[in-house]
Length: 521
Image (cartoon, rainbow, N blue to C red; front, side, top):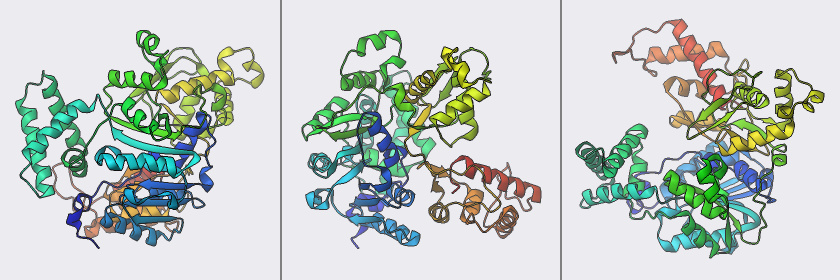
């Protein structure tokens, strides 16, 4: 095996986790919404460029056993770690390969979905051109490529911080010392600069963000690597077009609809081409990171997503929204707020269905069932819908469409597996149990990371369908008594004796978390 010092990602491994927007389930849905005919995800072929240790692509292979997956990365160390996980899982539909992106040619075959997350901005121009060439030469005719990158205008302020850090650590070789010194100089500048200036605010905001995540890998690879090249959206699209590709959409549609903005903004940009619309919205929002979807230039797209299309999908909430008390039988408007977006509606059917989705979160349901459930809760029959314009399926579909662009709803053609009740002997898959034994994060059925504390890690490792609640409580008690699980009081001192009722409550809380985060299988 190569010397880890040959590759910075061997010395400071990239945080290896799932990214919801890269899952074939999401890519298939996005492509179909815009009129494409992508390969069904139950029989697709997927390539991930820069797969690290497989934290993103391995859960996909477990989720879709009849599809084929290939991940490559330049870090031999991380590829080795991922191969160990694959061997323990015993899955045979995935391969992780230590390879250079520049090595890929047409002999590798075609892929229905190509994923390139966290690579494009962080490699030299030669590799960026190769990535786009791979998307052209190795992508199926109705294939979709996901490429993420840092973007302007939001990265202008971040570039000042990167320049500061690079200047401060220019004589330091050790990556870990670089990270410590880079964070120290940012803290110094944040505390020393005038908070009323744009630069002072940027220092403080970036420091607060770093303190919140405590992600040293992100600090190193985002600010201290040799390459970090942000692009305006229109620049990225021009590069893609030069390789025979076209812009499909942003992977996350939240905030990309001009009609969600004030009339003066909407009226100014609505007549513009799609890329120009989104470019101006980036200027308004100060966007600093993008997840772009590409397809072949020859593909005919339908840019007008209709209400009728919604009826073919399963609908779920992206997260539990915040809202004031909701009365579904009146027309009073209610604002449903999620991180970075919100939707306000007084439509009774919309309120009834949204509250139902909140009850079953994170599960999703087909449109017909969602509509019928909403009507039932309002005490309305299908015949009465004809006399109530707000209770028609088309109106609900239109509201859901707006909610999707507001970040409230997620749509899918084939929903993720979800189990809503733990059962007598709860079960999670082998992968989350393996992840719980190795670290503090597991992959949910929604292809999202689930952070776990000590108790949750202990419980998840034992959710193999062979242990009931009493077994789980007994196991946690033994782990506390042996010191495997440390319980601290409010003053920070170790608790010597934990009441049985408190241990049982902790297990019940954990089972609730396991259910609500979509880990059960």
